Amino acid sequence: MYNEGIKFYRCNTCGNLFLVMVDPAVRPTCCGAEMDMLDSRHHTHEGSEKHLPIIEVNENYISVKVGLQLHPMDAQHRIEWIALTDGTRVEVQKLGLTTPPIAKFSKMSTDGKIHAYAFCNIHGLWESEK
Ligand SMILES: [Fe+2]
Image (cartoon, rainbow, N blue to C red; front, side):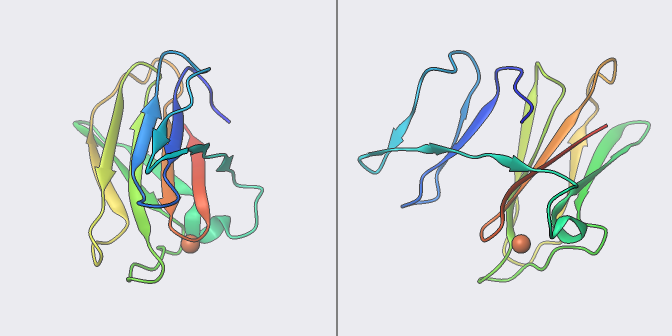
């Protein structure tokens, strides 16, 4: 997993999302329990064609779409959010129930790698880089 100090935690009870950016030893709690860190899957994992975030850098913005075949979006199975980071800045876009799994982000530094994350309510966290 990409580690530049950014870790994602999700509450298994209420679905709350926490980002830990400074002290990796901190384990957040929610709904009375310690949260589990989300481990990300990559292009080598089964199901990547529907889950891998695809980063497209445009002149004034960056778009991220989830899946070569767009991931389904309904109440039972959907992408809950998409996040993008350049290592120093993180943007998270929460998706609606019927929104296509595509998000636009403001332009970030492309001096180094940028990383995109997509969270599927069934298949977990997926990560790609550009
Ligand atoms: Fe999925």
